[in-house]
Length: 129
Image (cartoon, rainbow, N blue to C red):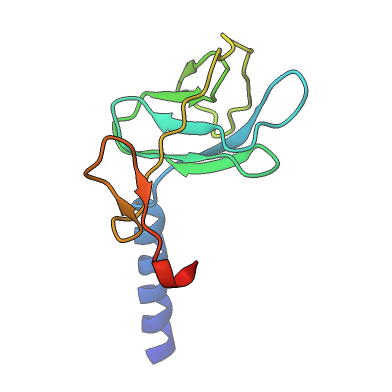
């Protein structure tokens, strides 16, 4: 009798977890030459997303109310796809506008550099010379 009650409770618990489970989508993001590593997969109007792995593969939980998923990668045209009945979405991105230049901005820690000057100046101890 006790084992029957445990079996029924376990069965109910399993049904509740599947009832409240989130839907997920998965697939690959690639271009004409192959997989895109680090492509962004995000849901429009939501702060939920992921990036692709080294094989261009992704898996992400679909938030409640999401209708569109956005695929993007630097130098490629962003693609928006409406969510349908399929849980697998494979996307091929097209090359977009090439970047003319890349600007990298960096700074040093305050202890090593005088940051108050218009140009950062390294501070070197005289004993070190």
